[in-house]
Image (cartoon, rainbow, N blue to C red):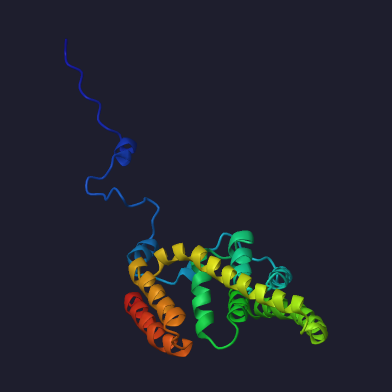
Length: 233
């Protein structure tokens, strides 16, 4: 019997065949912009998309008012819980980057952070809403407590309660630092250098009592210079 001749591959079948020199790791739908982005160097973590975003300036005002009214003894731990864990407006890495900038700028850290977050979310309207939420309700509470404190400042119970609040505030700040430590793994400096700077800052401030200004001018400037070198293309 005659041997059947092989059926030639059609044009459709040949289109489905893999190209021999095609890189297997390259996605079919990738664009030139995606390729350039993958080859680019480190960038700011704030460019990443957050799990969700605030819908209005009113929502920002309500969340920051709730945040501020919980901040007895320190607002920073509450800000991390509300913005990162509850509302999911920021990732831990984004919160840490905003906090780093807020600590370098003059003024209260959390107020600076609220202004930057509000402006990033909804522009100047978001910044004013976040600032109003941080200041308005706490101002009213502080005025009432100040008038009350004038009459009961010397009472032993009041004095003991204030000392207890100081200890609680220290614990809250420490717990926030522990929660944010894993975020340093994505830091542009790399985990080893980031943890080394953290340890050096703790030793100098907590043990050696070096003023914060000199630490920002020394270790802070060194960290900024190292990050700048790694971010340069």
